[in-house]
Length: 249
Ligand SMILES: O=C[C@H](O)COP(=O)(O)O
Image (cartoon, rainbow, N blue to C red; front, top):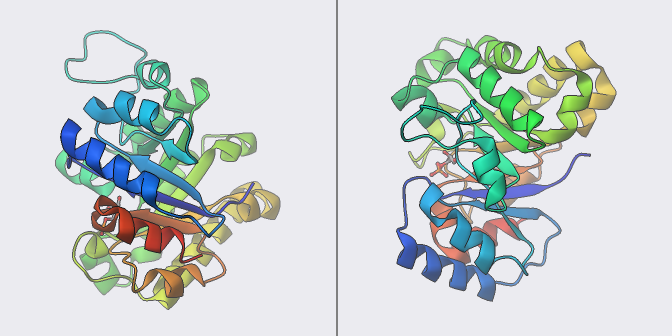
């Protein structure tokens, strides 16, 4: 079911005391929009965040996971471990994971499978780099990222998948895609899904935009018909800014 979602990806920010402070600030905010709100702290803060936000309408989600159930994978975290601390949604495929940790489409397909097999939802990230956009290849790059990681799934799987288009050139740079660029790509993503799974599936999938979304540009981006929400990095680290974006719907 297509929903409006605003998810804050804290990335590798906030130790436990800082996370406690941010969560306390989040609890003071007033939500006037109907968007579903999520926050993704680091692994070490997940349990605390889950406990602290248990009574609030803010879902605590994870930034990553391994595809294996358990075993000799030093430093890794599995789906069942996330579930055991109350986490039911995971971000997969973020461009920082692709770039700094060499995560390929093939690896991401395995992670997606593992998350879904564990009854988790996935926020699946993808997006082109600046060179792709400059050469006009953004659609073919995005199409191949989606096909390679997701097109082995059946249509029902998309009940538990949220798409997150994040042009790499707009992440943390202050340079956001224009609302028109975001809309054009989101419409293309929906068309790509429709070609494979039909328009019922394509129309029911939420597609988030991520990349330098701030309180001053959120409303214009969210006003576009195929933009169902945002994946927010830097601006999610201040409760007031984050809720200004949540309330931009
Ligand atoms: O996951 C969030 C995105 O990478 C966007 O980050 P940003 O809002 O700091 O550009």
